[in-house]
Length: 113
Length: 113
Image (cartoon, rainbow over all chains, first blue to last red; front, side, top):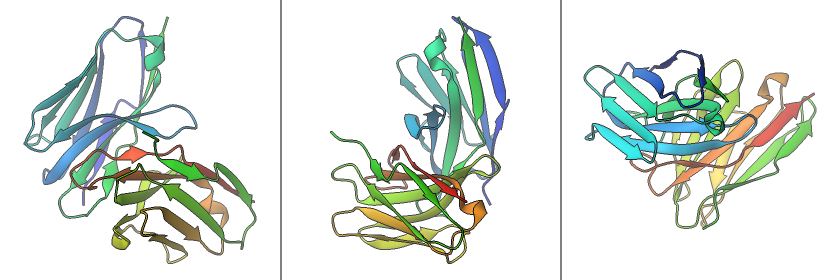
């Protein structure tokens, strides 16, 4: 059974610092890993999807890496801004459970001006 | 291109009643997945539909059911509501749920009194 863990649960950084968010998963048999952002009371916004054959994916200030052998993914956000304050969730799509994303509990990020 | 829409956005029901939630996927998407989000359990997978067929179901009681129509719109139904069913219900659409980005709607906030 896939288990996804995100540490730390909360993080506070001053504006301009780089953010590093960690995600670990127990089952390396995945189709892909996805990163999402959730603002309070809202739905999820897709940030990046990394296919199992890829090592990293980039979009603007965001970069996500994937290491299946160690069961880890890391999301880097460069030069953080107050607008980056949100909860960040990672989710793994395993090969033995069709269409089911297994989510971590999320990391709540606060970027202070 | 319109995003995923969910109706209604907010719902208040009493114990024992039933409720139907609706999800309209992004045009062209044939896969719809449903998730329940609560503070205690996080995001949990309910079921996934593709071309009107349920391909996977999560560990929820039979009171939770769903269906998908020929235009890919999906509904989920919860019968005999319990207090613990209070949650944010999110649906996500994609071309193919296992390999493509899942795009989430804003959710339906269900409160059971």
